[in-house]
Length: 204
Image (cartoon, rainbow, N blue to C red; front, side, top):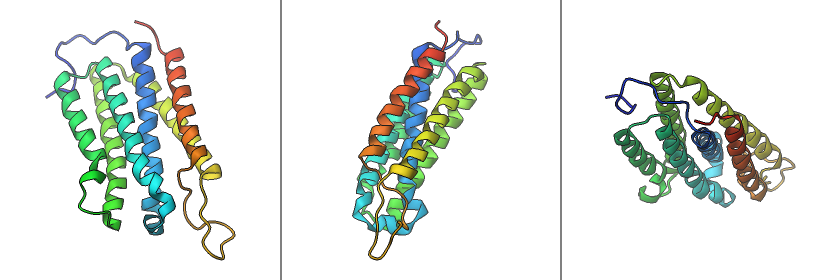
């Protein structure tokens, strides 16, 4: 079953809005995975209350990104059936923290892995769709914008994210946690990513 909508002729180049939305959604997917990464990088993060913001906001950021990304893929020719199926999978995966029996260390790690797996799944679907519809160029541009913005966010989070100092520590042994600076940077970079996608995209 093809992920593309019926018809043998490739659609016109996606609109500026679709490309901008694709880049922004991809960035937010990566941002969600970034903010969930501390739980995989250090098991002590799962036991520290300062990381509760990461636990609750990372899936929500990724969920918003996934929805934007999938709606954008509709502009690339994704069929309605696949759009609905992937939306259901995306929502189920990224709200797993609501229906997990308890926040065990294994459960928190599972949430982190689901965020990463969801991003890989959606990017893979996008690549297959772009190849089938001969739209690899616009899709690659959107992905490049998303990756560059995510790299910038990772740098900001590393240098300016929250640092927890345990007793006797002069430098934190834990990864940075999501603080106000990182959250504001996420919003600003999402807006910039959309604007760049809009400017670089071609109108229909």
